[in-house]
Length: 219
Image 1: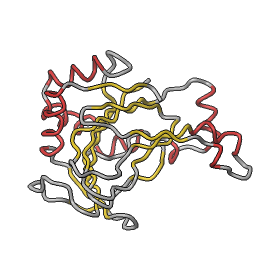
Image 2: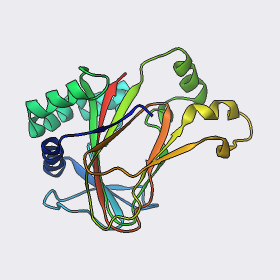
Image 3: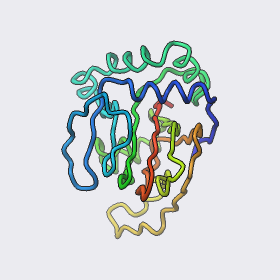
């Protein structure tokens, strides 16, 4: 766990507008449909049974960056949110003063969730991952900012686990009960941040909806 901050109300409002205005919006069926499909940008409310995802292209390798045009998509985010909001996020989110590496957002409808994962592990082996940790190689700090949640929300908590605890289990019998979990129920404007060595996800939404935006910065 890195930090837990509060984002000013006017920035939260602008970021929420930016999420709905962003032109690259797709939705994924829950829980077993792995196909992504285009979503009409006029849809500006959560969809029951689906997670609407905006800007969710994995850019942890150079091929993905080249294929999807990382800089062009980031520019769309910045153009929509404005230079003042961009500068505030760069100056006030840890590491302070560093440029934003990537942005994505999720709108969780009733019945949706996000399983525990790490954004880096599907591109490297466990050995490479832990060697990188030991050698203090570049990582990513993710700031998850809650932009909206319905008054009737049940579920949708942020769940975080320390992935490095699994190192002693590698090539052995995996004992997940040795990996502690932290659960956060963020209010609107809360910023929960973690590094790229931690598993994270969102618990199933039993009722209501929730919107968050993730701001990634290189550590």
